[in-house]
Amino acid sequence: MRDGSSLERLHAWAAVAWLALIGGGGLGFVARDLLHAGRPLVALAWLVGAGLGAAPALARLRGAARDPELGQASVEWIALVLVCALALAALAALGPWVDGRSLGGVLAHGIACAVGGDCDDGAAALANAYGMRDAALVRAQAPSLVYERGERQLPVDWRRCRERSCANAPDEGGLDVHRSDAGARATVFTRLQRRGGRTYIQYWLYYPDSNTTFAGADRAWEASWLLPRLRELVSGSGDWPGYHRDDWESVQVRLDPDGSAWVRASSHGHYQGCKEAKCRNRWAPHEGWARVSYGSHAGHIPVGGIDRGERTTTAEGLRLIPLETHDRRGYRRRDEDVSPPWRKEVYEDPVGDGS
Image (cartoon, one colour):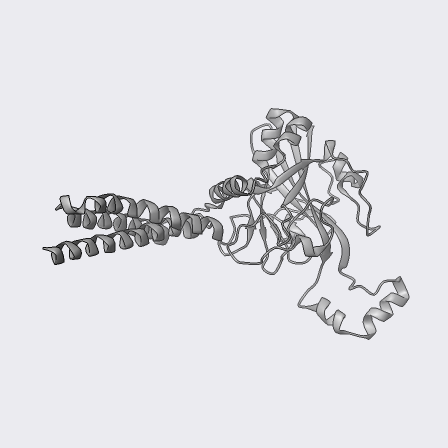
C-alpha cells in the first residue's frame, strides 16, 4: 500500500513539473514570439506561466491521499494547457503577423518602473507645458523607434550624457530597449505648435555623435596614416569627414483637421517620408514607427511596418521633455556646424523643409 502511495505521489510531482514546463513555455512563447518582448519580460512570463500551470496540481497534491481522481484531473489540465499552447502556435504560424511590441513595451516599462522606481516618463513636465489634454496628445503620437542593424546608440538627455559610451545599448535583434548599458534613459524632446487648423508635434532626438559612412570607409580612414594628417593640415581636424559631435535628429507629426496623421523624419539636412528619393520632403502616413539609420542616425518612415528581427525602442518607455519649458542655458555646442533644435528654422516654421 505504501509503495502504491509513493508511486501516486511521484506521478503527482511529475504532473507538477510538466504543468510548470507547459505553462511557462506557453506564456514565454506569447511574450517572445507574439509580443516580441525583451528578455526580462520573457523571463517573467515564464515564471508566471509556470506558476499558473503548476498551481492546480500543487493544490491537489496536498490532498493526494484523499483524492482518487488526482491523476485524471492532472492529465485533463495538462491536455487543456497543451491545447492552448498549440492554438497560439498555430495562430503565429498561419495568421497574419501582428506587431505586439507596443503592448509589450507598456508591460515592460510598467514592470521596470515598479521594480527600479525610476518612473518619471515626463508626464508632469508635459502637463505643465501643454496642459493635460495636449500632454496626452503629445504622448499618444510619440513614435516608436526601430534601428538599422549595427546601430547601438539611444537618443539621450544631453544634460546627462554627451559621450557615445553612455548612450550605447545592446545591438540585439528583436530587443526592445529603453536604457543604455550605462543606465541612461531613452529620451526625446518635444515641441507643440498649431498652424492653419493643423497641429504639429516635433520629437527631437539627441545623440552624442554622428558617423556617416559606407562600406566601412570610416574604418579604412582610421587605419590610414596619411589621410587624417592631410585633412588636419587643410581643416585643422583629422577626423573622418562623415563624423561630427552632437547630433540632433527629429521625427515630426502633423495632425490634419480631418483626423488624419502624417509623419516625416530628418535626414541629412532635409526630410524623408519613405526611404526612397521620391519621398524627399514628403509626409507619410503615421503608422507609429520611425527608423534610425546606422551611424548617421538619419531617419525615414518604414511604410508598411518593420521587420520583427530589428531592435526597437517603443514609445511607451520614452521619457518626453518639452523644449518650451526646457532650461537650455547649460547647452554648449561641441561642433559649431551642428545647431540645437531651438536654433533651427523648422523650430519656428513647422512646415519648413530644412532640418
